[in-house]
Length: 538
Image (spheres, rainbow, N blue to C red):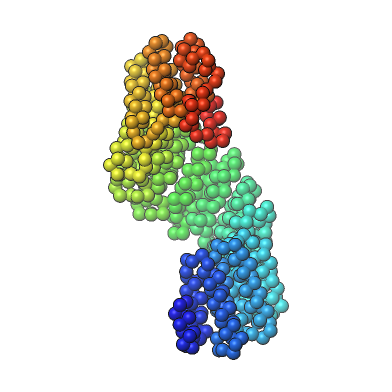
């Protein structure tokens, strides 16, 4: 733009000079690019009014409108509409250089769609259709015009959005049948309608979406290669079923997935399942509540891995997907959940160690694996949970991972100790691991312990140390440190009271403090509205 200023001073500019600068603003990432582009348009109009041969044309206006379509500034859609209206008025007054074309209209429709103004986009579409029907030859709508408006309704969240989207789709088909070859629906158009019905969140909506998918399959089999259902089409319908809440949601999701695979194997390369397809299937399995769901989810994950290793990069599992399955094992209550979760975590670690940055385990990955052991009924679960924590600490301190151990991981290990099952020897080992874990946390940079940590450690003492002097002494030591750290709340008091006799409890707190927590003891508890109270009731 500075160069343009210099050229103006030397009197060597023309319309192309200004259009080039406007085009540069169109490609710019500047948040005010659209306003800068319009400012140059206004300069051109002012120069034209002064009699200079520098006059904006349809290309100039269209670029500025497109700048507003790409802008995230409030009011951009209105600006685009205003510019279009100015073009229409000037062209009707005889300035044929400003007659809007299909690209111009599509840019305005895009601006309206991105702003969430689906109704206004449809009004403009209708206006252009009426212009065409009246043979005023203002503009010829094409598949982008209709698809943009359909997609706007699909994403609008309006109650009647799907119905409106399909009505526009039908208008599009009618326009094509009447001779507007540029308005021929393609797979993107069909996908937009499918998305609109899926987004209704109803079983009826997903059923309608699947009906449209079947129509696409039939058209494709009849040789209509531009109406080819792809992985996006199938995955949207799968996602609709997975979230539908229908009793047979899993069966429906699996059926669509199998059809997609069959379509791919029959030669439709665009229908090859990708990571989203597999994750959607896993989600459906998780929501099914079936007893075999954890293993089935892992089987799908393994198929993803096999697909990726065979060369299909779009099926690559990542940290989020693998962690989701680890967490699912942890929540399953399955007897082998700990082993399964730890094996998946080790798979992530191996992938990451081999250079796969997308499979780097994070805090959630380690915590999910530790919790899986904590909730299991296996002997030795305290040892396994602590081993995972030690592995995390080792990898973090060696700079191999970015995930930093924190108080939640240590507390999860304490929880695994607290609910260890087995004989006296098992409990002896578990309380030793608990004491060591608590001591490590207190002396590390990953703490300090919070009120949940203290409550969990006290629970471990209750479950693992026989009733008597040794238990009372251990709990007393932990409780005094909890008071010093300002981490006492109702939950901690409740756990202490449940672990000691009435006499031991009164002696520890002091008769005058029973039923009343001194403010100093709770000074460092960070209260999150509702959350602390819920924790206390666990």
